Image (cartoon, rainbow, N blue to C red):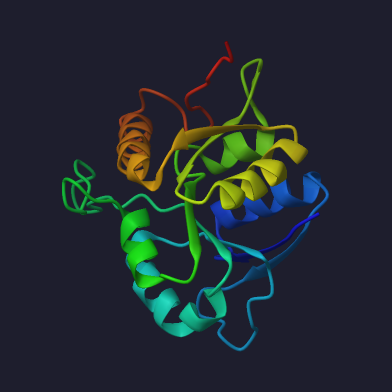
Length: 192
């Protein structure tokens, strides 16, 4: 089983911690400003807002070397909620990977709401966690954590696909904010 550190104790951090525990792995929750406690997990989830990532990396970057780092952020313009704030050919995950060259970055959990993660299902389908990354072992380690909890893990491809996952996250947030779907809803993928 894995040992997972989650930086961020908000609703997403709590929901991901529940998934980790349900799958039989151990988890530690660390506040983003709590730098006294070292990161001990082999897998580290950045469950913070996009704007907080530079501070987390500045404070904990050395501790993240050699680890699987999971980026759950959606780099959204929070003033308008109508655009991503990364370059058209980039992503938050790519920025994080560039800042953490000794880490193995995986984009995941950004297309699921906390309630959907906690419920483990959307309708009659298990919650699907889409992920993208360049390191196959890192994606496999995360997939084991996700599927161990009874959720579905789906590899969307290389880290270049993080851009599309972030766009999907923006769409889902926009739909929920516009009350077209609930914050307990989301997208369900049915296996072939």
